[in-house]
Length: 71
Image 1: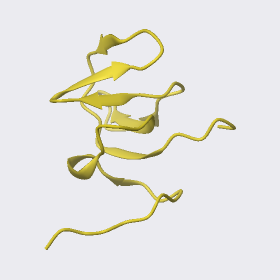
Image 2: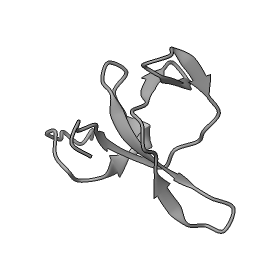
Image 3: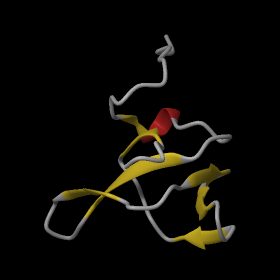
């Protein structure tokens, strides 16, 4: 069964990330520490892009939440 969620501050699994929204994403560094990126990202098929530049971002995020301008 698919989990239905509302836009919240809760971190959600990247497997259910939407394609049509700016997102804050977490990535894991080489030491296994999670970091939230400081710019919004957007899922484009199987790729992630920077919505400001439309450029591909070479990341494999683990979690996401809606991007909030005041972060």
